[in-house]
Image (cartoon, rainbow, N blue to C red; front, top):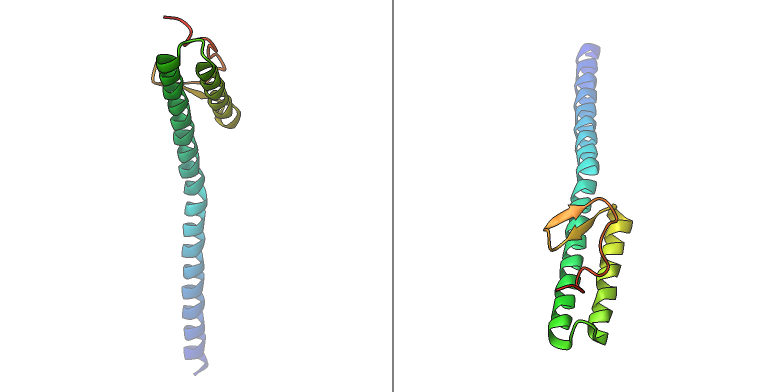
Length: 114
């Protein structure tokens, strides 16, 4: 009887430790994968903010003129969007070149030229 009891106890312990190991592996995988997904969403959001600010600036220039109050406001919005990307990700989206820059080298007056 003792032998059977020991076998049942041993089988249960192996089963429990296997379940715990499986749970630990799944938790670790979620922990490691979630930040990269969140980072990807942050980068996408950053890119969309810059794209939107670029679009709004182009619209303001087209409708109100290059040196209008509206265009100047949208330049400030574009600057803020680029700064936020830079502060959060140390990169910024260039809508004209359709690429990320890893240097803080944007031209504040890139929309002032023909």
